[in-house]
Length: 316
Image (cartoon, rainbow, N blue to C red; front, top):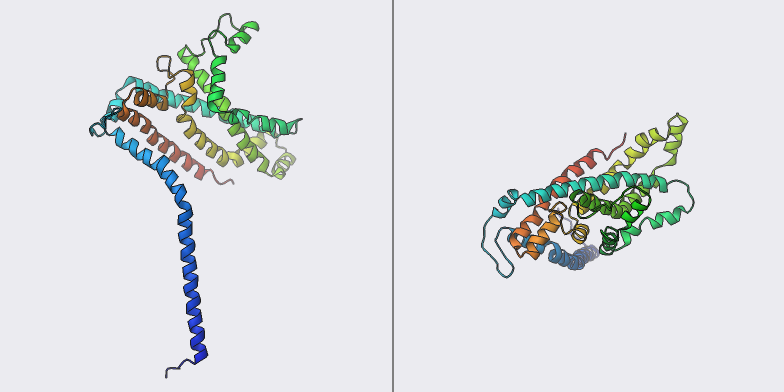
């Protein structure tokens, strides 16, 4: 026999239903407001990232020039680049530049972080001062380096001559190998604070009890570093290397201001060659193809580094 509901029960059921509807409407308004507040960021991302990226893909598949939309030619630009000696040299330059810059920043950044982690006088001052190369605008600092490498007024040549190490000035920017050395040195100088401060933050977070226990067991400073400090910092180091690799392989300002890719295209990077051909030369399609050539390279680098981070994220 079905039990009939009394009037109070009917009223309670109606209140519960009304409350549920109000709660559902409130949740819906919150979800809508979330999309509404995210809309400006999505517009900026689409305008500054998605649209230019899609436009670059389209241009790389055409023979577009400045003032002309061009015709669709498919992957012809990419095949032509693989047979272009200047592009092949530029690709080698980019890999060399990235490898040595990132490697030196890892080694020197670790050493500087270990030094700043010690109890030395004016430690807080040095920790703040180390950020100056990172804080100074890149273009401004590179112009200062350009003056220091000047063939007539080079500070480095003047110092080296006065201490008797050289008899004639070093061709910092006119010799292909010295020019590559110079741009790598400036990139290391600028990126070193990022590595040092990040690794210093990791060193500070390591419990001191681990080092004390290891020293009680007879471990020295070297063993403590390789068996405690370095394994615990490994995930952090890999993440920093990941970001630095992306920033370094796509660098533009340092090479463009100092050498414009010379001498003999020995310092050209993919970004500077893309600018020279695509904007200065007016070949938008070929310039877009050169700039997009970095994208699969970066994807491969990011993939392998992320796999390495996942493997090294645990410490036994």
